[in-house]
Length: 425
Image 1 (tube, one colour):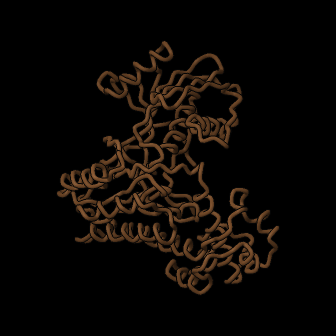
Image 2: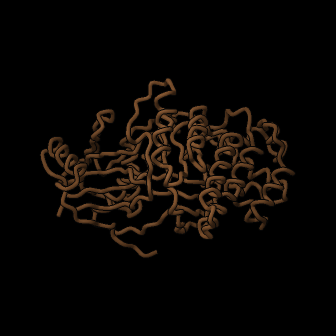
Image 3: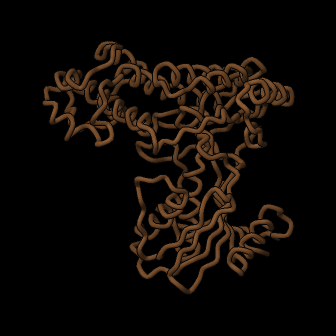
């Protein structure tokens, strides 16, 4: 794969208030000025929820909100990290002895993951240190990939400091990994609304259980169809090995799995293995104590959602007169499936989706991991102003949750630019 340096742009920092403020805070913190700045955008998943780790395509869009890092390489081996948000404490460590505590979701660990990833990718040692000041305007724990943006930003910082080249890819399809541009309709905008309910994936078992339920469903479907189930990890692999359509896979789910939850003992009977083998060879350490697995529901969601992604892309390509309505219908179906089949919604998200549809959204759905975070709605451009005003009043003012409304709680967005390095002109 061809390699290239990161995209670089020269800017007059004084003409960009956010960069200027970051420069001043950096100078106050470290007593020097940054050598360069790095940006990585957040993203919203328009459709395709909880299917990427099952091997299926998703349809993300970079948003205008982003992570910015001001950077100064230093001659010592000390990596110093600071954040413009006082909720996130300073951190420093030796650049050549990075230790990441996986048991604690601390903000600086996401930076360290990006840094260490580049270090290991190139097999580097004796790295120089750097001073970094991080600033972000992506709402945290909202499903807009603030953590991923920080990891990407840190990786780009490290590549730039080291003067290395790295191939770039957009993550959309996973089997094999490839990216395809999708032209979104021009007569509509996407609106992000934050439910203001934060879900910490690292502190709950919801996400891990869903991943394991999908894996178990894949194994039971494979066993039912006479495949070598012990080698199967993802639902997409079952479809690929059978060579059938997603619609046909939904039929197989109906035949092979029952809607009632499975106990660990029943899973063992289906796979003809012992409980000990299930726990040690199939389940992950953080799912070994689960008492039930909803395999039918999870498989139904994954295969139907994968089909919706392909249909969404097809509608965008063909661009019929009622494109916005058709895309909205798919987004509505996606939310129902996430709510009922995957059970990754919450009362606040459901209420917010209903409000968005009531006030003019052609379609609205949760986005991101779920259990909190944001909704994404497709809204006709000529209804945007009234839509924003009505949703603001109905959810943020009348919800009686004492929500602190901020601009990033409700906003229209267009596809944002990619990661960049800024040099001062």
